[in-house]
Length: 376
Image (cartoon, rainbow, N blue to C red; front, side):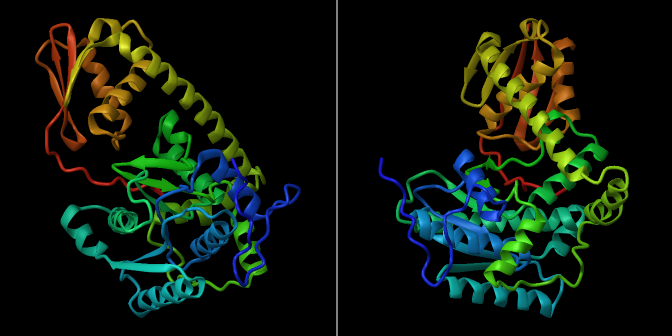
């Protein structure tokens, strides 16, 4: 196999990362290589708000594409206008459009109304905005993917600019809220959700690396006058809790990331073990229906059973569901229930105890939304 092209982007100073330095490029390229975050074929939409992280990501991916020739399809700057800050929101959209034009990248934009959704669904403003934002990014990715040079390859992919700082905050938030092993593993570098792949090339890159990159590249970005107050929980962790914890442990961010890596290792092991055990506990399977041997499942530890349930739900739903610990515990409780007991779950999933079996089904034609890869 021939080595990838290392031609620098026109008019830039992009070079291959030096393995002895700690620049953004080194962290991002390592993560991209380890998880194949950038598809060789097909297209990728970069979610760009205009803030420092997303501006750095778009510029980095433009340079990465010039060096390595991937993705071979479209590289698109996707901007979602939340309309929450009036003229500032409009200026953000104009800024991203101009940035994309300077980089020679296609620009796509969409306007959402999270306040209306908040009123309709009773969600928090942050949750409503996040779900609408990912819905629109998915739409952009599907459109860009369909018009790419190889639309049949892979599925639609979006790159977002979550950093290591965001990861540490997410882990702490999940710990406070109460999360299991999977949740405490943190955000994944690549996550597949209903035909959409969400890539996070900066997940091992710190905010300090991002700001150094922006300065080195002479890049400007937009400042949010609301100081990112859409999510009060995250702001509390970022502005109040973490600074206080740093008085006890100055390296708390590194500690959280290290602990998250340990949880991720355990999570991978249990998932692999569940995949190994699953064929031996399946009584029957057909489209939209899987029957499990209840007695056989009860021979295994409860934690492993719960991972087996996740495999079953993923197979029925063609992806993971946004299930809480309570949902999985409800499934497990059916193993010791009387015949006829049933429980309903998101996306039209239903489980029912029938004699010696636990029957899990999915209703045909159930609408499948895109779960937002969250910044809780």
